[in-house]
Image 1 (cartoon, rainbow, N blue to C red):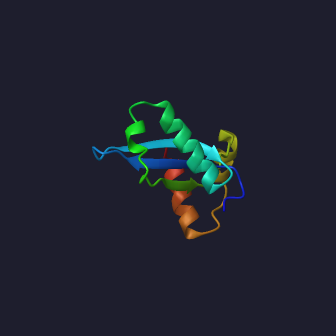
Image 2: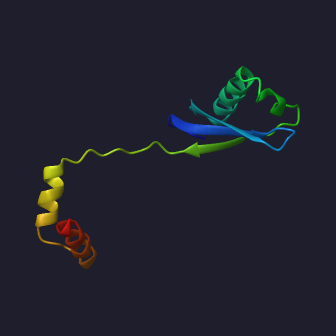
Amino acid sequence: MCDIRTDVSGRRCDWRGITHRVSVRAASLFEAAAAAVAAFRQETWATSALTPNAVLSVEVRPPAVVHKVPLGAVERWAAGPAVTPSEQIAKRGIRRT
């Protein structure tokens, strides 16, 4: 069960072996499948995949995480002391540019 709203994709191959894919937002597996079927039914080229034996593949993707970092903060971090050897290598590469 997916207890947060997340992006999911429904996918189905038609009789020609072509895979159709649509991304939808849903709160549960069946809501995602129903939304994918509704989207497929709106596209005439994809309706041939919706046979009685059709099986939808639903892929749940976690929400993307976006961070906004001011350039000044990056420069201060790069100029500061390194805590670990890997951080030292990373900072050395940034300082060169």
